Length: 287
Picture 1 (spheres, one colour):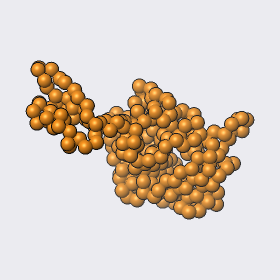
Picture 2 (cartoon, helix red, strand yellow):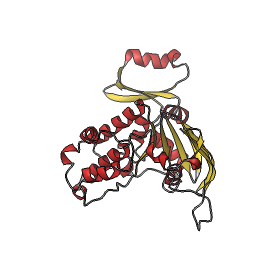
Picture 3 (cartoon, one colour):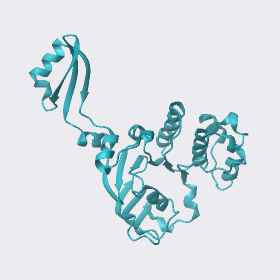
Picture 4 (tube, one colour):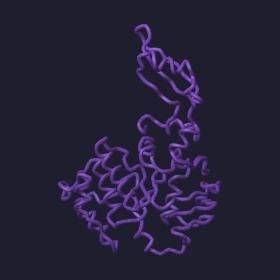
């Protein structure tokens, strides 16, 4: 869907580039995660791709055509959900949605979307009376109201309870199954792990890693197996190298003679990888 080559960008009055020649592609029909600490260039990259920021260096193509050659019809094909929900607070939810519906040629089934996110019963309530979670859910409806082919999501589940977060994640997966493509940024690593086909880590305007979550966890993980088992009334732990573990007599003896409690591979987490790649630890509120 998108191919980005040697993208550079500098804000006016800045002495250094915010983006320092990044290159990546977003494949059609995938969920692509874009991760990095605050100030790394995530938002700038997204604003350029959705044609909010111009005057960049490098080349960006959308479906094989130079992004700069697209007119306003480009916005018929994309949906955007910003991290901070932006709605008209003195209008009802439906008045908000109807306002934006008029901007597009294609319109989705709003009743179905509103019911899916649990807002249909509140459709005539002023958005100013909505909780943060309700505004976030309304944000996703707005992003989908034009039946987009490409969806940009910035922290889509931040501030949601587990039940509503799962509903939104299911909707994102269904969008992909239906042929859609998703670009997502989030500090909630569990969401990225559950949703994304590939992820990129950007640090100080440079991309440091791009791969699937599985491959990254294997690459950064420890190739070992840890076994917890009961011994003499307490829990004992032993670690074994993954290589030829099926021939390791000590490992096999524990499996066959001990009361096993847990077995874990040395696979790491995306949060650990984030810290290793970026050098920045996630705050507790974003974990």
